[in-house]
Image 1 (cartoon, rainbow, N blue to C red):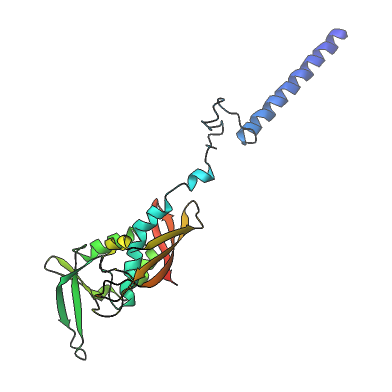
Image 2 (tube, rainbow, N blue to C red; image 1 turned 90 degrees about the horizontal axis):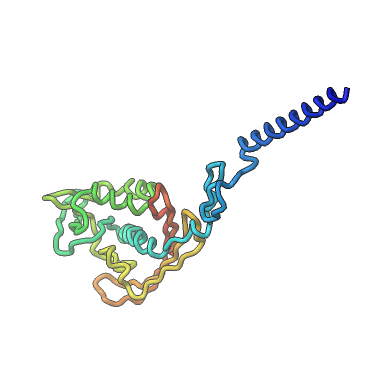
Length: 233
């Protein structure tokens, strides 16, 4: 009788062990419990296969000002040309221009050659590398006919009058302005806001005594930083 009772006890203990093992396996499979493969905390890889070493501080540890100095001049130049009834050209060649007679109320269009692009496709690709698709699409709704490819050059409509925001006939010169300041705010993993303050003056003048403030947002899309918004205060 005692022997049979002892067998029953062993069976019960074995059942408890089996149930516990099954429950433990289920918890592992559902990621309720993670077992660290080793004691190296720098590794951060757990049995679940997930990497838990991502640090939000590391994720936003990028040089936002350097990114803004690379991307924003394109937006500034494009916006300024719109402001004075010209079109974006990257950089103009001042002594290479053509005049087109529209035969409409004696209106003539003056176009200057671009020193930066030879085709409209090159210009668009440059914009795509710096500006959001929405900005580009909105810009070209009315600007497509303001460009002309001729003799291996790209000519861009340009108004030889008015006031320039900054020295924007050449976008590569914008960051050479003195003074020009970049202020970063709202820095996130994939976006940040930018405020730019710079001096501008009348076309043809070396005086830069007017202050302009431009606000913008730069976002990261598919690994590339793009200006998604810009406006003048």
